[in-house]
Length: 454
Ligand SMILES: Cc1ncc(COP(=O)(O)O)c(C=O)c1O
Image (cartoon, rainbow, N blue to C red; front, top):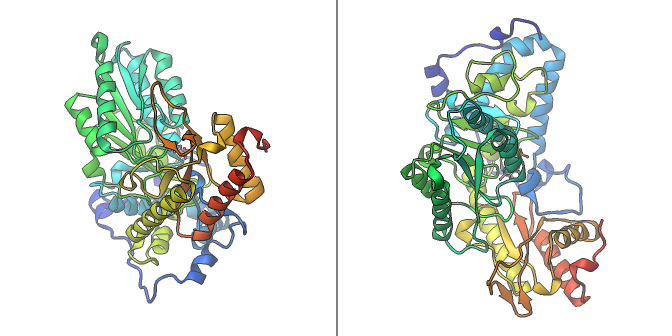
């Protein structure tokens, strides 16, 4: 890259930027079954993919758009860099701004993934500890099941410079939002001992494992009442699986991956950052350092920016479905609940949360007879289902805590769960295959520790 970077793309006034409408599709019919199958015809055949939550999925039309952006760069790099790249990223950010009901496109940055956003937030917090602005007793509060990469980032950027962490146990299986709010309030009380302050709350919008939709608005209200300095909502799984309204949510930072539930290729996420928060920077420092997070994130050195440029094509894709992205979310939710209920009834088990506390993923209890008694057992079952039945599904182990007598099935305590996802390409047969594979194991009298390890 040469030193003309500041001319990279046209410059819009903020007013222009905020009033540019996303293109409206001219639809003659909704996507047909065969068109839908074609969009995902690159998926390996014969695999029951009921794990959209981990790696997402990207339709052919979006991949084609990505490829054409890549070719556009290779055909004429200078023209791409100076005239197309920044405008393209801005178009994507404008669409996201409308989707999440933000006021200003300058509050929206595109970054690689949720892990990058966690680094952005936690480095900023870490700098306050390092400079002495925050004291030793000050803390960051998280749920115990916060994503491992986020926990590692706290270790790297916060505890290494004197901050501490409070982990709130997420009740699971969970019956109501109140159970979660009660535990969270207790965690905030712990943060105040010895005169400490809670400087940051990290709240998942949808926890990864076990998967539960968290009452973020209510928790943020509590945080504000208790004078927590900042709130970062980790919505890695959120956009495309539940409604994200950053105004209603009221967090200082919000991240969501587009590659999980919004059909982008790997890898892009949006990050909302309230402009009140100062000293926020992309972890990769490049030419645009100091010009605001959105500009910093739009050029982090030479790389492939195509995943950030396909958001308009994603919008066209989702608008081919009845109700657009809202219709997709609604149907995925209804189907995952229906499939979860079908499985728990076939296995005589339970759901990990009531349907209203899930979006497009739900936890379903595994029969106790399978004896999922450790993380290793859970991994064995996951490998077994993939290798012997071509089923992609994550398996979760949760030991009983002291004194707990639930949940139970007719044979004992339920300590294993599958996390099933539903995306537009799934069919009922995918879940039937899982149902049958588990029933077959029971009929064969197998327990998880006997299953081969890969
Ligand atoms: C809750 C949560 N946070 C963060 C992440 C990290 O996402 P990424 O790997 O895209 O950075 C994930 C990934 O699944 C997640 O589930």
